[in-house]
Length: 355
Image (cartoon, rainbow, N blue to C red):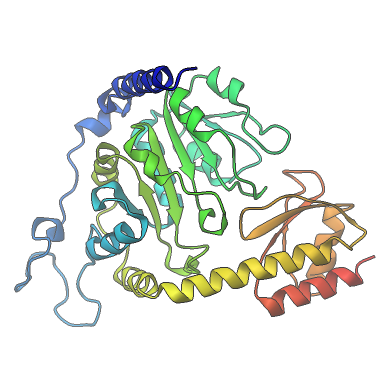
C-alpha cells in the first residue's frame, strides 16, 4: 500500500475510534451522575494555614490527612514517564486501579470483561466482586492473544498483561487490538521495567479507549507501600478521581515513593542485579534433567515446565525455598521469582538435590 494512502487510512480509523469512544456512552450512567465526595483537603489543596476543617487531632507526627491527589508524587512520575500529571492517577496498588476501572465502565449483571488465561488472577476476582461476567479467551501457542476471537466477542473491557504473569512473555499485536476492540483495553505493564520492549504508555494520547497500569511493587522494590498507577486520557483519569477513596495513598507511602524516585541510581543498580541473577539461573537450569522447558521471560521471574511440579514444590518447601506452583493453571509448571545472589544460590543448590 502506498505510504500516503496508508497514513490517510490510519487517520480515518483513528478519527472513527475517537468518535466511537464518547466516554459518556460507555461509562456507567450512575457514575456519570455521581457527585464525588469533596474532602477538606480537596477544597483547600496546596494552601497553608490553620486547619480546623477536617476534625484532625492537632497533635502528632502524622496527624494530618495526606494529599488526596498525591501532587508531588505525580510530578516526579510525570517527569520519569514523560506523561502529563493530568494523565496520571495513583491507586493503593494496581489492584485498586483494576477495581476502579471495572466499577467505572462495567454495569453489574449486564456488562462483560475478557481475560486471556493464563494471566493475572485479580482481573477475574475483581470482576466477580463487581458481579461482572468474565469471558475467557485463552492465549494461543507461545502465550499470545487469540486476536480473531477477541474481535468476535462483545465485551465492555479487555484485560491484557504484558509482560504476562505467569508466563513472563510480552504480548504481540496489542496496538492492533486497541484499534479494533470496541471497548476499553486495560494493559497491565507491572513488569515493563524488566523488559527490552518499550512501554505503550504514549499510546494513551492516540487511543481514547486505552488504560495503562504500572506498579512500583516490582522493579522499584516497593511492594510494601502499595502504590500502582493508571495512565489514560484526561476524561478517564477524571473518572478515576471521581470514584476513588479520598485518601487512598497514605502519607508514609507517598514520602517513600518520592524518596525512591529521587534516587534513580539505586533503582538501576537493583534492576541490573536482578537481570544478572536471572541469566545465571536460566543457565543453571539448562543442565537440570527434570526441567522440560524454560519459557522465554521479559519479567523478573521465569516459568518452567518440569516433570512433576507438585512434587518439586513440596521438595523445595522442605529446604525452605518457596516458589509458586502454577500446576493448576499450566500443567506441571512452576514460577520462580528472581531473588538476590544468595537466594538464587540456595535455590540452585536445592534443585540439584532433587531426584
